[in-house]
Image: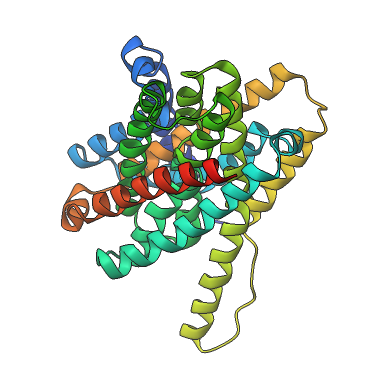
Length: 337
């Protein structure tokens, strides 16, 4: 009997295309224009991907590789994201910052989800993606939550767009307000504030470093605690998804923990042991940026502008509300604690 084998070539063709897009995006962020405004390769890749996907009908032979990058490469990138933090850093920042982060993540997710559905009449998945981007760790959180929800690519693109807009606004606005005396924070307080309220890790670093190098370091550590909270959020979402699926199927469906979330925790634990030299960890983090950029570019290519237009400005209204909520609530908590 003759065995018919399916050639893996289409996967590698699509991956090569996405890798080229990611490398180009990564190279562009080295230009002075991009470094000055804090735009990273993830944002360049998704914008470029959307432009390509809506102006060029790519060959079907590229599709398997593009989808592989959007799903499998994404999960690997989330796992390697764990090398950005260790438990010693989390311990060093103290219980106050941990409490603030836990409050911010949980309440922002709940507030954003229900406000998105009830107030702005958004699709539940889109409301949750926007809320996750604001509450946890920007684009990485959106991508991880999208993997649990299995939502359409255009919803992911919209949610990441809100992260870019309001995260970048925070990065420039907060240091300016601090310099003008609006917040009245100490350098240490501002680091906690930036880390607990700004969307992306890089944005929090830039905002904190604008006040001082130590402030920037505090901002990153506080921000990474929010990244760590991605794991329980993913597990809860997976549990809810499984429960809904069992109700729809009218039978019990076994709960499965998202394995990439466990891998993420494992990498944090391994990184905490300090077994790898700093230059190796830096190399892993650079590789992770490239993998995330590939996933972002693939999602961009799969995104159709026609679907994004149907949603209108409602996602911006929700993201704007969460922006003011984060700024006000975290500022108050920092003052009180």
